[in-house]
Length: 275
Image (cartoon, rainbow, N blue to C red; front, side, top):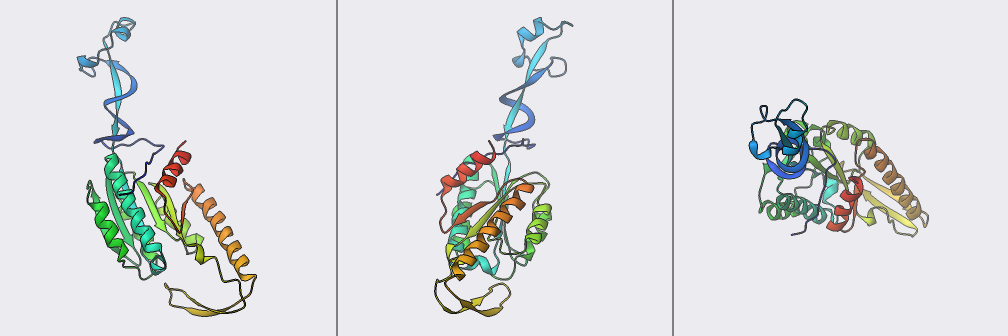
């Protein structure tokens, strides 16, 4: 199974031990400070040096922060546009890599697949087999309908802050993207854009092309010219910059997957965004 390494810039509040820095006091290596032995009666953590230098002659114990687990959530767009070309394969590989990486790190993993409604749901769990099961399930779909159900996933995500992977091609209005990011603001959102190069590489020739929108069912004809490819590529470039600017305002920049998924690039993404 493919895997990558992820990091978070915030502290977990989960009481269960794990891999990430937390706000919970417990057994760990991160020193938090001192307290009196009366307040925290644990002689094993007695600090002789601090006790001898205490002006009130009180016995001091060391306090440490434990490392804790975090929830890892995936909200995946399963609308009709995500079923085109190699997107199902890319989505299944990515979701499986996230699930397996969460298992290897010791974190809980949950998944929501959404189009007009929630059509695929795995509650938070710690499972080694879930990655392979999810991979096979997503390769088959279902990819249909629109993306509107993504705006209603908030109540299904829980109150505890999670590292949330938002996977879509984001081929909808930026106002809707902003509304979605606003509703997911309690979480640490990693937007992942799945794109195919042929989406902006129109044939450099003269002639009519038949276009089809899989979500609305609308069809139209477009007259192509040698300049069409340059215009389409420019439009996608502008869309990319707008999406980056919007996502940065809500936390992390988007991670783009174009034609192929490389787990090591996702590791690099976390190293750069959590530096």
